[in-house]
Length: 76
Image (tube, rainbow, N blue to C red; front, side):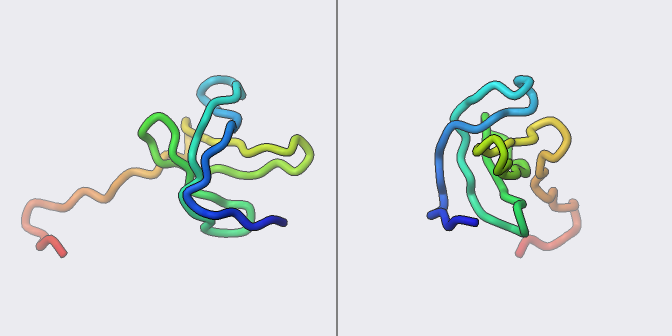
C-alpha cells in the first residue's frame, strides 16, 4: 500500500457525520488496513478505502475507551 508518517492529519470520511469529510489524525497502524485515528477528541478505528481513495473513521461503533484503573489496583 503506502507508508505514512504518524501522526498524519488529512480530510477523512466520518461515520457519525454520514460520511462527510472532516480533518482527522491517524495515530498509528495496528494491522492490515486497520488504523487508530483521533477525531473530535475520540480515539477510534479507521480503514482506508482504495476505491474511493480516502480513509473512513468509525467514531460511532469502534471508539477506543481508555482503561479505567480499579480502586484497589496499583497504578503502573
